Image 1 (cartoon, rainbow over the protein chains, first blue to last red):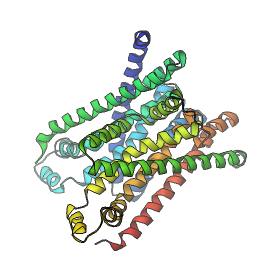
Image 2 (image 1 turned 120 degrees about the horizontal axis):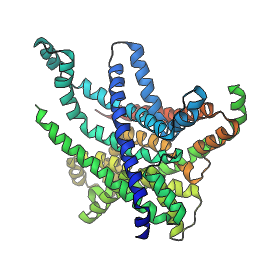
Image 3 (image 1 turned 120 degrees about the vertical axis):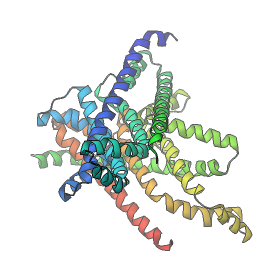
Image 4 (image 1 turned 180 degrees about the horizontal axis):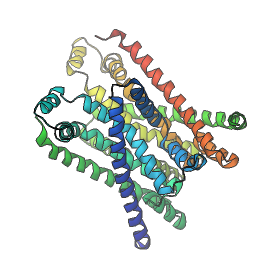
Length: 215
Length: 217
């Protein structure tokens, strides 16, 4: 109990950092993933190959190695990032490989006729994308997207290795100072479990909300 | 330049890759040995067994791997069991994997039509023979692609074991990189080794899938 009183504020800060990393990492990953999905669906063979290679590289290597390449390896090719920026970038790169595969399947499943019909009705390309392609795309892919956001959340823990002051780092520091390792790890496990459940529930809500676009 | 660095780091990297391979294979075995019985219990067991397996699965799928590794690493000595870090690591990876393996087998087991159980009963198959000769062969076959990606997840997860001080590929690479000041080259080399392992698992699973699909409709 005293521990919670003493370390409460640092935990809150760490939690906020974790939430930020998850949100920004996922958002960047979603955008990048969408771009890669369009690359893999493009008519150019080299672009398709490049997208497939990207996905294979990022899905076939541990997140920790990717993080170390960006953070520790970056400076030797002239890219110097602080721990937070390197963490976000790696989360986005990692997430985008998974997001792009989901979008690729989702876009491929969209009825071509609807897009043709929309362009016959004189809708602009942006309008077609925003109003015809996106709603069913996000509806069908929502469960998988939520799962990937959860993976991103779970990978933020690894950022503690390069000293991003997120939840895991703060709790580990506390554990090292007080030797309360088991309570620290247990409370952390439960905290992350709760966070994951919150995201899963939010995903279900979003799915319901998008459900009105179902035809 | 790079070749020379690689020659110097080679023996350590090879040894570390071997450790990564051992940890991954053992964790895969633990995951299978725990996951399959859990799935059978989840499909056939009474309600309280189902509920407790659901809690186990939800917990181990909801908690980040690094937290699980540290939890088991600190927890075992806490209850008086002193094991080397590598054993705690294998146990953590294996228990985490069991939760995913259980879900995979649960899906393929529940996909087997009840008619087959009834037919087996009509033909005087014992319960044991029904499971081993009719249910498992089909369930295992259908689980191959999902199990392969689970194996890749374990392989990648083994990188986190570096945190508890097991000298596997990632931690050894970190040490080498801090000594020769070539982090980019060293980490890329490690990434290539992980990719090689991933590729082996992928090809193996494709081959197995092809061979197993011979008898199906």
